[in-house]
Length: 567
Image (cartoon, rainbow, N blue to C red; front, side):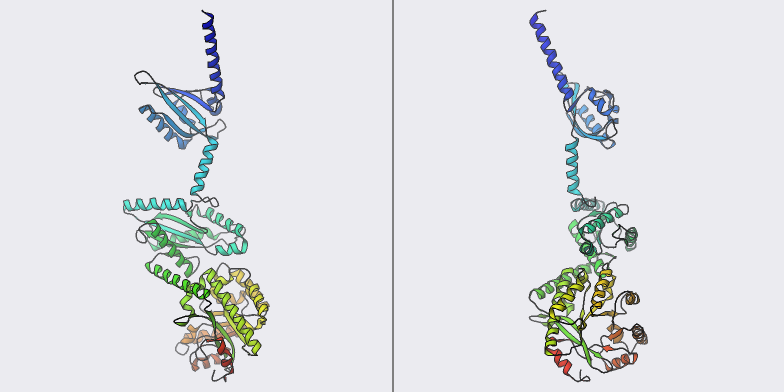
């Protein structure tokens, strides 16, 4: 053999050896398969990583694939074998230690001069870090990181698909929207960290009960279910949810939590995703407005009421912006002496064209968290200014009672703000009376309300329980909270002469109050026989058109100057 031939062969062997080292040390694992794909040969690194034999059958290869990936990988491999097209697939491989990592397998066919496949050559490349990051990004795009539930994007996609399927099948879909009652108060009182814990605990508690639940807003969740048009079935689902949430959720929430639920059914309450979701939201609003911890199914009348409420909110905002809100004062009269002993401040707002309007025209604003607070602040400012003016003028106005709505207690500093304003105005605490209804106590903020009332009472402010007898737990409230005055609701006074039961109730309430050293005020007195009967029962004060209609601040000195009988 010629020396130059030996040299050529040596160089070829060196190049082949170098190529083999490059392959062995590279990130890709080379492999090859016969023309039919029945036998596959890997290099030794395959065996080191997976523990599988280097020479494997298709079945051996499939055994080291993740169970969720076997079907798609084998399907793609079969298609490449049938068509001769290249293979390119991402999948998970089981490592020797039992863990799984992501790999990308690619292969191409070697053909003869006639185009027939002789053999397959491929590589398997580790793409684990890149794939995990990609999957994490995809997960975050469709899930809520706090609760692990699907987010609004995923929910809207699922809702659209569910409605398409229902339209094709001629079936229905029930959409439930859930909202945590009192979540804002949790954030305000305990901080956003506590709010996040509540949301996460709520989600974990709900997953076994409602596997399809998604978080679509701050404290708003949604569930899609096959049609449950029966009110009984929907109520059954609600009871299941309530039962799941009754037990403590976390250390900060020993009493569990409550939810309100709105339900809408496709296609009855909405023919597309947007309309159906809007209907469910309206039903949810109705559920929360009637009483927390309730479920409601959408009705067309709800939409009209929502439009009416929106109009009320718009009017309230306008009245605040234009400084049209003013207090009117209705006298409270001693039923024995007929002397005016105080007033109740009632909200009015001045319409430029229609004149002074009753609060019913903006009723929806009193349950709106921000507007209610703004209206309460505006009223308190003007009432204290009127009181300061009367004090300066030597007008003995007695006590002025002020109605306080539930949202005004949403912040923990209500009592402190009232006392600070009294101090700034130079008005003695004994001149002010705070009126609350029993519904204020029934919210999740009940304990905070009780604390605020105790602070005000300790400072010398009178506390009155309004609309007594129309609530849910009047007697327990008299035990738990500082109450100086019971206001007997006008519904019992109107038919006092005609209904024996009303007389018995009023007499019993007055007797109960007297035994607890609590004063009583009867509302809605319009006739002298009503006043006389109430006085005979021992009721201390009366209020109503018989003694005077609500009047502007300028009329208060005139009302006080009148003789008792004329008043």
